[in-house]
Image (cartoon, rainbow, N blue to C red; front, top):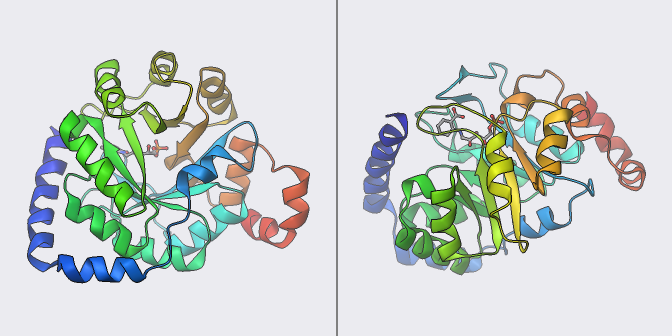
Length: 279
Ligand SMILES: O=C(O)c1ccccc1NCC(=O)[C@H](O)[C@H](O)COP(=O)(O)O
Protein backbone atom coordinates (compact mmCIF):
# COMPACT_ATOMS: atom_id res chain seq x y z
CA UNK A 1 0.00 0.00 0.00
CA UNK A 2 1.10 3.52 -0.78
CA UNK A 3 1.24 4.77 2.79
CA UNK A 4 3.45 1.82 3.74
CA UNK A 5 5.77 2.67 0.85
CA UNK A 6 5.99 6.27 2.02
CA UNK A 7 6.79 5.18 5.58
CA UNK A 8 9.43 2.78 4.27
CA UNK A 9 11.06 5.67 2.39
CA UNK A 10 10.90 7.79 5.56
CA UNK A 11 12.70 5.04 7.52
CA UNK A 12 15.55 5.21 5.02
CA UNK A 13 15.61 9.00 5.15
CA UNK A 14 15.69 8.92 8.96
CA UNK A 15 18.60 6.49 8.84
CA UNK A 16 20.54 8.87 6.61
CA UNK A 17 19.60 11.83 8.76
CA UNK A 18 20.85 10.03 11.86
CA UNK A 19 24.19 9.55 10.16
CA UNK A 20 24.56 13.23 9.29
CA UNK A 21 22.78 15.20 12.01
CA UNK A 22 24.98 16.26 14.91
CA UNK A 23 22.46 16.46 17.74
CA UNK A 24 24.59 18.61 20.07
CA UNK A 25 25.23 21.07 17.26
CA UNK A 26 21.56 21.05 16.23
CA UNK A 27 20.52 21.84 19.81
CA UNK A 28 23.04 24.69 20.05
CA UNK A 29 21.79 26.08 16.76
CA UNK A 30 18.14 25.81 17.77
CA UNK A 31 18.83 27.55 21.09
CA UNK A 32 20.17 30.53 19.11
CA UNK A 33 17.24 30.62 16.67
CA UNK A 34 14.38 33.10 17.03
CA UNK A 35 11.24 31.66 18.65
CA UNK A 36 8.71 29.91 16.45
CA UNK A 37 5.69 31.77 15.13
CA UNK A 38 2.53 30.64 16.91
CA UNK A 39 0.85 28.25 14.48
CA UNK A 40 -2.03 27.26 16.75
CA UNK A 41 -2.39 30.82 18.01
CA UNK A 42 -2.84 32.11 14.44
CA UNK A 43 -5.56 29.52 13.81
CA UNK A 44 -7.36 30.40 17.04
CA UNK A 45 -7.59 34.03 15.88
CA UNK A 46 -8.21 33.73 12.15
CA UNK A 47 -8.41 36.69 9.80
CA UNK A 48 -11.82 35.56 8.56
CA UNK A 49 -13.69 35.21 11.84
CA UNK A 50 -15.81 32.24 10.71
CA UNK A 51 -13.04 29.97 9.39
CA UNK A 52 -9.26 29.64 9.65
CA UNK A 53 -7.21 28.80 6.59
CA UNK A 54 -4.05 26.74 6.27
CA UNK A 55 -3.09 27.12 2.61
CA UNK A 56 -0.83 24.45 1.17
CA UNK A 57 2.16 24.76 -1.13
CA UNK A 58 1.93 21.45 -3.02
CA UNK A 59 3.42 20.65 -6.39
CA UNK A 60 2.36 17.01 -6.80
CA UNK A 61 0.77 14.18 -4.86
CA UNK A 62 0.53 10.39 -4.98
CA UNK A 63 -3.19 10.55 -5.77
CA UNK A 64 -3.05 13.26 -8.46
CA UNK A 65 0.49 13.22 -9.87
CA UNK A 66 1.74 16.63 -10.99
CA UNK A 67 -0.72 19.30 -9.84
CA UNK A 68 1.07 22.53 -10.74
CA UNK A 69 3.68 22.71 -13.45
CA UNK A 70 4.39 26.42 -13.08
CA UNK A 71 5.54 25.99 -9.48
CA UNK A 72 7.32 28.84 -7.68
CA UNK A 73 6.99 28.13 -3.96
CA UNK A 74 7.99 31.57 -2.67
CA UNK A 75 5.67 33.41 -5.06
CA UNK A 76 2.84 31.07 -4.12
CA UNK A 77 3.47 31.64 -0.41
CA UNK A 78 3.53 35.41 -0.91
CA UNK A 79 0.25 35.25 -2.82
CA UNK A 80 -1.31 33.17 -0.03
CA UNK A 81 -0.15 35.65 2.58
CA UNK A 82 -1.51 38.58 0.57
CA UNK A 83 -4.82 36.77 0.17
CA UNK A 84 -5.18 36.43 3.95
CA UNK A 85 -4.21 32.82 4.69
CA UNK A 86 -3.66 32.35 8.43
CA UNK A 87 -0.91 29.74 8.14
CA UNK A 88 0.87 27.82 5.40
CA UNK A 89 1.51 24.12 4.96
CA UNK A 90 4.62 23.27 2.96
CA UNK A 91 5.17 19.78 1.58
CA UNK A 92 8.80 18.85 2.19
CA UNK A 93 8.62 15.24 0.99
CA UNK A 94 10.69 14.87 -2.16
CA UNK A 95 9.87 11.44 -3.56
CA UNK A 96 6.06 11.47 -3.48
CA UNK A 97 5.10 15.17 -3.49
CA UNK A 98 8.05 16.80 -5.29
CA UNK A 99 8.49 18.96 -2.20
CA UNK A 100 11.66 20.16 -0.51
CA UNK A 101 12.97 21.39 2.84
CA UNK A 102 14.57 24.19 0.87
CA UNK A 103 11.16 25.44 -0.21
CA UNK A 104 10.17 25.77 3.42
CA UNK A 105 13.35 27.65 4.35
CA UNK A 106 12.95 30.05 1.42
CA UNK A 107 9.28 30.63 2.26
CA UNK A 108 10.16 31.31 5.90
CA UNK A 109 12.34 34.20 4.79
CA UNK A 110 9.73 35.64 2.44
CA UNK A 111 6.53 35.63 4.52
CA UNK A 112 5.63 36.18 8.16
CA UNK A 113 2.95 33.48 8.44
CA UNK A 114 3.49 30.42 10.66
CA UNK A 115 4.55 27.34 8.67
CA UNK A 116 3.63 23.68 8.98
CA UNK A 117 6.18 21.18 7.79
CA UNK A 118 3.96 18.74 5.90
CA UNK A 119 5.77 15.43 5.89
CA UNK A 120 5.55 11.95 7.36
CA UNK A 121 7.18 12.25 10.76
CA UNK A 122 8.18 9.01 12.41
CA UNK A 123 11.29 10.03 14.34
CA UNK A 124 12.69 12.79 16.56
CA UNK A 125 15.47 13.59 14.06
CA UNK A 126 12.84 14.81 11.58
CA UNK A 127 11.54 17.15 14.27
CA UNK A 128 15.02 18.58 14.88
CA UNK A 129 15.25 19.03 11.13
CA UNK A 130 11.82 20.70 10.96
CA UNK A 131 12.88 23.28 13.55
CA UNK A 132 16.23 23.85 11.83
CA UNK A 133 14.70 24.46 8.39
CA UNK A 134 12.30 27.04 9.82
CA UNK A 135 9.03 25.23 10.56
CA UNK A 136 6.69 26.38 13.31
CA UNK A 137 4.63 23.20 13.47
CA UNK A 138 4.82 19.56 12.43
CA UNK A 139 2.21 17.10 11.29
CA UNK A 140 1.78 13.86 13.25
CA UNK A 141 -0.32 11.25 11.47
CA UNK A 142 -2.18 8.79 13.71
CA UNK A 143 -2.39 6.25 10.87
CA UNK A 144 1.38 5.73 11.04
CA UNK A 145 2.10 6.31 14.74
CA UNK A 146 1.00 4.19 17.70
CA UNK A 147 -0.19 6.04 20.82
CA UNK A 148 3.17 5.87 22.61
CA UNK A 149 5.06 7.36 19.66
CA UNK A 150 2.40 10.03 19.15
CA UNK A 151 2.82 11.11 22.76
CA UNK A 152 6.63 11.03 22.58
CA UNK A 153 6.86 12.95 19.30
CA UNK A 154 4.29 15.53 20.40
CA UNK A 155 6.21 16.15 23.64
CA UNK A 156 9.47 16.32 21.73
CA UNK A 157 8.11 18.81 19.19
CA UNK A 158 6.71 21.03 21.92
CA UNK A 159 10.05 21.00 23.74
CA UNK A 160 11.58 22.51 20.59
CA UNK A 161 8.84 25.16 20.46
CA UNK A 162 6.87 23.53 17.65
CA UNK A 163 3.10 23.18 17.59
CA UNK A 164 1.62 19.92 16.34
CA UNK A 165 -1.28 19.17 14.04
CA UNK A 166 -2.37 15.62 14.82
CA UNK A 167 -4.18 14.00 11.92
CA UNK A 168 -6.86 11.32 12.03
CA UNK A 169 -9.16 9.71 9.48
CA UNK A 170 -11.46 7.51 11.58
CA UNK A 171 -12.93 7.10 15.05
CA UNK A 172 -10.33 4.55 16.12
CA UNK A 173 -7.44 6.89 15.29
CA UNK A 174 -9.26 9.73 17.03
CA UNK A 175 -9.64 7.61 20.15
CA UNK A 176 -5.88 6.99 20.14
CA UNK A 177 -5.21 10.72 19.77
CA UNK A 178 -7.63 11.62 22.55
CA UNK A 179 -5.73 9.29 24.88
CA UNK A 180 -2.73 11.56 24.21
CA UNK A 181 -4.43 14.96 24.24
CA UNK A 182 -7.86 16.54 24.21
CA UNK A 183 -6.64 19.97 23.18
CA UNK A 184 -4.50 21.55 20.48
CA UNK A 185 -4.97 21.01 16.77
CA UNK A 186 -6.75 17.92 15.51
CA UNK A 187 -6.77 17.50 11.75
CA UNK A 188 -9.50 15.35 10.26
CA UNK A 189 -8.24 14.18 6.89
CA UNK A 190 -11.11 13.65 4.48
CA UNK A 191 -8.75 11.53 2.38
CA UNK A 192 -8.17 7.90 3.24
CA UNK A 193 -4.39 7.71 2.93
CA UNK A 194 -4.51 4.02 2.00
CA UNK A 195 -7.12 4.18 -0.77
CA UNK A 196 -7.05 7.96 -1.59
CA UNK A 197 -10.86 8.00 -1.44
CA UNK A 198 -12.20 11.33 -0.22
CA UNK A 199 -15.42 12.37 1.52
CA UNK A 200 -16.21 15.49 3.53
CA UNK A 201 -18.58 13.33 5.57
CA UNK A 202 -15.50 12.12 7.44
CA UNK A 203 -15.26 15.59 9.04
CA UNK A 204 -18.97 15.62 9.84
CA UNK A 205 -18.80 12.16 11.44
CA UNK A 206 -15.71 12.77 13.57
CA UNK A 207 -16.50 16.37 14.61
CA UNK A 208 -19.03 15.18 17.19
CA UNK A 209 -16.22 13.23 18.91
CA UNK A 210 -13.70 16.10 19.02
CA UNK A 211 -13.67 17.91 22.37
CA UNK A 212 -14.61 21.61 22.46
CA UNK A 213 -11.18 22.83 23.52
CA UNK A 214 -9.43 21.20 20.59
CA UNK A 215 -9.45 23.02 17.26
CA UNK A 216 -10.75 20.88 14.41
CA UNK A 217 -9.08 21.40 11.04
CA UNK A 218 -10.78 19.75 8.07
CA UNK A 219 -8.13 18.61 5.59
CA UNK A 220 -8.23 17.58 1.92
CA UNK A 221 -10.74 17.56 -0.94
CA UNK A 222 -12.19 20.99 -0.18
CA UNK A 223 -13.03 22.42 -3.57
CA UNK A 224 -15.29 25.47 -3.14
CA UNK A 225 -17.20 27.81 -0.81
CA UNK A 226 -20.00 25.26 -0.43
CA UNK A 227 -17.53 22.68 0.88
CA UNK A 228 -16.16 25.23 3.37
CA UNK A 229 -19.71 26.03 4.50
CA UNK A 230 -20.44 22.30 4.86
CA UNK A 231 -17.43 21.51 7.06
CA UNK A 232 -18.01 24.71 9.04
CA UNK A 233 -21.64 23.78 9.72
CA UNK A 234 -20.38 20.35 10.78
CA UNK A 235 -17.88 21.51 13.39
CA UNK A 236 -14.65 22.53 11.61
CA UNK A 237 -12.84 25.63 12.89
CA UNK A 238 -10.37 25.64 10.05
CA UNK A 239 -9.56 24.10 6.68
CA UNK A 240 -6.36 22.90 5.05
CA UNK A 241 -6.53 23.32 1.28
CA UNK A 242 -3.90 22.48 -1.32
CA UNK A 243 -4.93 21.17 -4.73
CA UNK A 244 -7.90 23.52 -5.25
CA UNK A 245 -5.62 26.55 -4.95
CA UNK A 246 -2.66 24.99 -6.73
CA UNK A 247 -4.71 24.32 -9.86
CA UNK A 248 -5.69 27.97 -10.20
CA UNK A 249 -3.47 30.43 -12.08
CA UNK A 250 -4.38 33.34 -9.79
CA UNK A 251 -4.04 32.26 -6.16
CA UNK A 252 -5.58 35.35 -4.55
CA UNK A 253 -8.70 35.08 -6.66
CA UNK A 254 -9.10 31.40 -5.74
CA UNK A 255 -8.65 32.05 -2.00
CA UNK A 256 -11.27 34.82 -2.02
CA UNK A 257 -13.69 32.66 -4.01
CA UNK A 258 -13.38 29.68 -1.66
CA UNK A 259 -12.92 31.46 1.69
CA UNK A 260 -14.81 34.71 1.11
CA UNK A 261 -13.40 38.22 1.27
CA UNK A 262 -11.26 39.48 4.13
CA UNK A 263 -12.92 41.81 6.63
CA UNK A 264 -12.71 45.46 5.50
CA UNK A 265 -10.39 46.40 8.32
CA UNK A 266 -7.77 43.94 7.02
CA UNK A 267 -8.37 44.85 3.40
CA UNK A 268 -7.67 48.55 4.00
CA UNK A 269 -4.58 47.73 6.08
CA UNK A 270 -3.19 45.38 3.46
CA UNK A 271 -4.34 47.24 0.36
CA UNK A 272 -1.20 46.72 -1.65
CA UNK A 273 -0.69 43.15 -0.61
CA UNK A 274 -4.21 42.17 -1.50
CA UNK A 275 -3.76 43.56 -4.95
CA UNK A 276 -0.58 41.53 -5.21
CA UNK A 277 -2.48 38.39 -4.14
CA UNK A 278 -5.12 38.94 -6.79
CA UNK A 279 -2.60 39.10 -9.54
O1 LIG B 1 -2.65 14.12 -1.45
C1 LIG B 1 -2.40 12.89 -1.56
O2 LIG B 1 -2.54 12.27 -2.62
C2 LIG B 1 -1.86 12.14 -0.39
C3 LIG B 1 -1.55 10.79 -0.54
C4 LIG B 1 -1.01 10.08 0.53
C5 LIG B 1 -0.78 10.68 1.72
C6 LIG B 1 -1.09 12.03 1.90
C7 LIG B 1 -1.62 12.76 0.86
N1 LIG B 1 -1.90 14.09 0.97
C8 LIG B 1 -1.54 14.88 2.10
C9 LIG B 1 -2.62 15.77 2.51
O3 LIG B 1 -3.15 15.55 3.56
C10 LIG B 1 -3.06 16.90 1.59
O4 LIG B 1 -1.95 17.41 0.92
C11 LIG B 1 -3.76 18.06 2.28
O5 LIG B 1 -4.72 17.68 3.20
C12 LIG B 1 -4.42 18.97 1.19
O6 LIG B 1 -5.32 18.20 0.44
P1 LIG B 1 -5.93 18.75 -0.92
O7 LIG B 1 -6.60 20.07 -0.59
O8 LIG B 1 -6.92 17.74 -1.36
O9 LIG B 1 -4.79 18.94 -1.85
